[in-house]
Image (cartoon, rainbow, N blue to C red; front, side, top):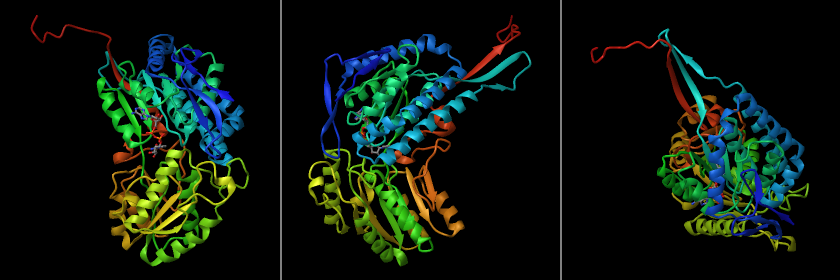
Length: 488
Ligand code: NAD
């Protein structure tokens, strides 16, 4: 049985009150680990350690030191990739193939930021000849990083790599449902000779996250999760006007025009909605199909859904695992029922799959609700499970109006062979990512984040590093002379 601890000020330790939490395998509900469950008091110790390290020797590191650190971490992730992938799958329920892909992406994220950090240089500004004016990038300080349960180590990597690379110190709090890979990653950090307090792990629930958001000693909080927690973090952050980055939920339209390559669009619609059992912030759960292709599209999906192989993520043939928790399972079933009550037509799924193997664990059939209209709750709210809703639209203007009529703005996709229409839609959709004739690709070089209620700020890309820096104007007068503004 895995037992995890906290990592504070360079030391592995138990929470002050010795709290633990059982961690479950969502495929069979078996207890797979006992994780340390910290309280605010532990978070305060971690914040103090990070503060001391930031105000101490860590400030003297060079960009070369930090780029080297990120590259070393990438190498250690590669070394332990299989072990990390297995931990991620047993804790989240996702297939091993997905987790292995995540580990490759995580190592790539560290290498990408290592390259950016290494190429970092301040700018020298045009100024009078006796003045040196420079624009410098400096670390923000102590960063509180709070991550969700759906992509535990990937989301952590998007924050840790730029935060450390920019010269900050870190306190990370993973979701208390899925702490195992972040704990293993911390063991990798502990192999390196970082000064104590530069990297701290505090596993626990909302109160630990709230302490990070409220603490006057934390300079930046970066949060990925739901809108409810995001709102309280934003309010708490006003205590010292700390920097915030929020990556929140989405309701992402996947818009198929009648002139699209329908074979590809049907195939991608499945991937958009059912990858990781739909527990993806950018999941294309809101399918919108143009009127003349709608019936054909829905019947082609209906034919494909029963063929999706549901099962334990460790089995090679499995295409979709369970959802992560009992709470999610219940919430998703409730949303499906609410959709049916509003008038949606249940075409497939909406229940636990049959068979003894699915009696324990948080299993759901891939679900298709058709004839959904834009005013229904099921078309507006994030489901975060293996459910696709199909809406009909007539023409470009209606598609655009309905797609943008959501408080969210994370990701959208458009399927068409008309490049002019593709370009018009890409420009007019108010989402942080718009894919055309594709779904889901993301990579470290491109920014990730949402418009509107999907968040504040961006991760990845150049801006994903800049978010962890302060800009300073350094002005040095090399030849000061009395200016006589107020006379002699
Ligand atoms: P959640 O908001 O319940 O929890 C996220 C994290 O915040 C966890 O570590 C949790 O312990 C902590 N937390 C909860 N309440 C808190 C509070 N009041 N103060 C501080 N911390 C608190 O989210 P979740 O259920 O773990 O994740 C699912 C959500 O995350 C979905 O809405 C999904 O769309 C979103 N998400 C967004 C992105 C993105 O890139 N935009 C990526 C992944 C997930």
